[in-house]
Length: 50
Image (cartoon, rainbow, N blue to C red; front, side, top):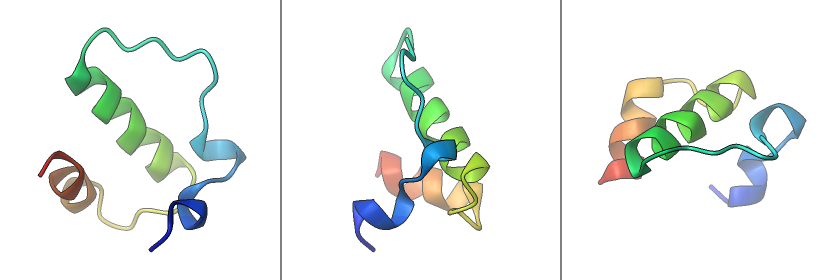
């Protein structure tokens, strides 16, 4: 999978201001889910934090 496969308008947040690395990852995961590109939220988060 390429990063361009994951990006669309729904998966981008301009001006986001996470207060921690954990919050940034949570925001990333939620945006990808909202964009309709992630089927398994928990599995995706595991792979991102691995």
